[in-house]
Image 1 (spheres, rainbow, N blue to C red):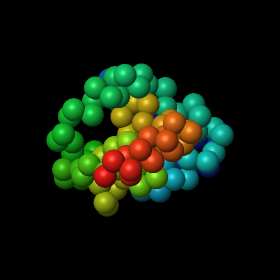
Image 2 (cartoon, rainbow, N blue to C red):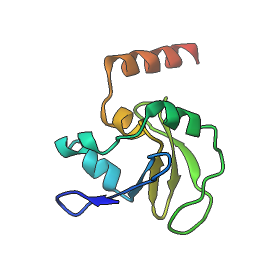
Image 3 (cartoon, rainbow, N blue to C red):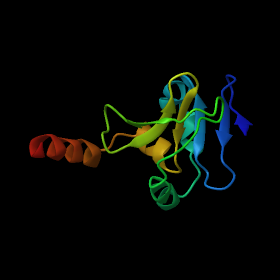
Image 4 (cartoon, rainbow, N blue to C red):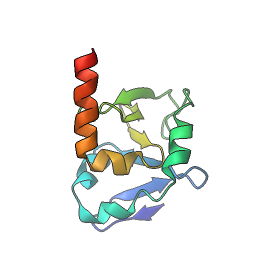
Length: 113
């Protein structure tokens, strides 16, 4: 756990390096330069974690819902409507930066559907 200037506390799993954000924290940090250093986990490990389907909220222990980012449809993360969202290692960096490849991938997905 670490705290950034402005009072946002980063909760990181010591095993897989996934990141928990309380409600609104991910959106607050998305455009901040200092958040470039938050997601220090291995994205390959994060992708492997996507196979885990049953994840409970660390705050209330209710089963979290699988969510898809509305802008970058390839990003899937877990969320608790009452408490926050959880990104596997590498997902917050992907969430933070929409690349030209992301735009192309999403366009192809729309054309195929």
